[in-house]
Image 1 (spheres, rainbow, N blue to C red):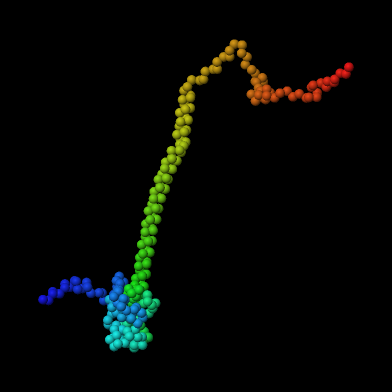
Image 2 (cartoon, rainbow, N blue to C red; image 1 turned 180 degrees about the horizontal axis):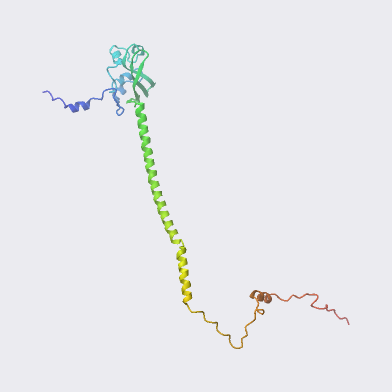
Length: 247
């Protein structure tokens, strides 16, 4: 009994993308092959041919069908079309495979590059895609930095405006209105005019004679005269020295 064919969607999902498309998001590794054969410059193409990155329409496949080493440059230079060449080798860790289109023995157009790193095969990204990714990441970080700076500047601006408003209100409160001051002085003068004159001083008590202006002394002069003792000359004011009497 034959089984029904799988739905078209499932079969399409099972097929790998055609070689030459952007397959930088996938990786190929065959651990069974790596455990069986050594990975060197002689067998690395056979290992690469197992991956979905390999295009069976290339000139290397034609050489394989004729029992010729697929990386024989003397044979590849006599052919035209798609081919793979081994460009960089660091056995046993790194191998770089380049896909190119050959027009003649001297002219080739480089298309894609693949690298085998410790048995895992990857497609190298295009230089334009690398630049676009780096620029996009840089623009993201710059935009984020500007957003943070703008938020901090807005916060500083709000604090400055509030401080300026507080200082302005304080200055307005402390400012003196000269018109208002003159108006208050005028009111006080008018009130003083309406008040009765000051009463005369009370009379002196009986028997008290007020001192004249010439007899009045300044308090400082009084204190000075009371504080200083009289100056006595020890020779002139004390008289002749006493002499002892002899009997």
